[in-house]
Amino acid sequence: MIRLKAVWIFVLTALSASTAMAQRDFSDVKIKTTPVADHIYFLEGSGGNIGVSVGDDGVLLVDDQFAPLADRILKAIEKIGGKKPKFILNTHWHGDHTGGNEFFGHSGTIIAQTNVRKRLATVQELGGRKTGPLPPGALPIITFDESLSVHFNGEEIRVIHFPHGHTDGDSVIFFTRSNVVHMGDLLFMGMLPFVDLDHGGDVEGLVRDIEDVLKQVKPGVKVIPGHGPLTDYEGLKTYHRMLVDTTTLVRKAIEAGESLENIKKIPLPNRWKSWGNGFIKPDRWMETIYKSMTRS
Image (cartoon, rainbow, N blue to C red):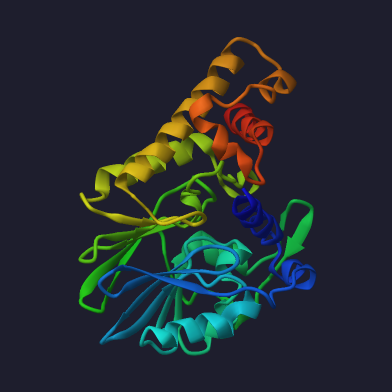
């Protein structure tokens, strides 16, 4: 429970990278490295989970957490035989996934979906906090609308935009030969998710996105979530079932004419109660679903 609460504190402070850095002491954060498959690694620290490809072509990084952790992230990469990343893929715009862009962008190429650059390059407001614009060196210099491929370290790394899920700029990263997928914040494993309704997120869109990913992954796939532990196909299916079950509850309540206040009191089904132990409590998740379904 403590770990889940900590994850959500970082998610919320990440609404503004500069504010997060001013309020949070990162001195005690350590970067944990876990081998995933072949030359793919999973790094945990503070903020969004990081994926790393290390090989003959160099290093490719998926997300880069907060700026104060960049040196520690680089040292973790060096311990697994890598150097400064040649490519940095941003799964979306939130500061706990892009805070290290300026540091890593000096030596590498930042790539992201078109809407990610738009948001990073302009002032954004979320949760009453304003952030941006980021300096030019922290912005993606290669953008795409639907998809692109990076042929690197012996495999095609497919970067595919899944629209209107967590935000309007989410990408899923498919390491096709290694059979590893980095989901970004489309996947919060073991906890209720944060859906950024103010920046293109949509709960029903999130459900569809997870359905689409499930159709594309192969047996034996390893799945890196944006937050939470490493998982697999069955874990992704479980997350999808949680989304379907909880959105169905709210949809039926809306159809029955229930008020938002009553909908916020709907308890999680027993099988999902532990998923409500993070920072996002069941009442907030029910409210998010309601607002997503009823907005014009």
